Length: 315
Image (cartoon, rainbow, N blue to C red):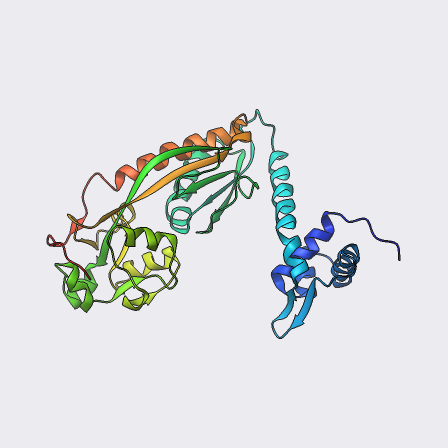
């Protein structure tokens, strides 16, 4: 049998089956027929000398080792194709076209939309794609054009600007404190409903390095979603950690241990160096840096409703 010439369509089908675990689901997601997806997978297998890419399991089609080897390359092609389309959405010297931004859940959902709305009001020809995820996007692979990161970028090919340290603190809703009382020391937290993580993350490790002994079994409400944790605090489910600037938006949230328990979250705006000469990318980068710098200051200036001063203690 004559081997087919492999194309981007074969990679799309491979990624579709990899993500959905089903030929039919992949076909629906890609807008093609199931036989087309099956044919693409078969042709890829032929190109690999007959190696199987997927095996059947109770959960659907599971990738083999051969498929896992191809996936990183397919993801790179996918990101490159998307970046090409964004580049083609507008001339490099024009303030028009698509800009893809990635940020953490909280920043992406709670902070960036009004910032982008301000920019859209003056530059309506720029379209935004926003990925709100705690997974770090690969800017070198062009998963996104601009990223707001909570760690210092290490790649020399990236342009990076530190916007400051976003301060975090302990907060609880005033209704919760009315029901359960207000803790005065850290030791008092053992008698309270705490809001925290389900699985340990780098942010948790950073807090532990600052002397905060956090363990999963301490929490009455567990979730790895920072937005869900913030919502739980706002709903009066218990005591949790959130950005001070966000807590100030709700006058019913009370800050606990304000003199002792403040945690800085280092924050950077980054962009691939190849985009330096693109006017719309530079405009969005500079706008995000200015607006987020102002946001950082709102967490340090002004005041929050504070509980009585705490004495240093341990959990």
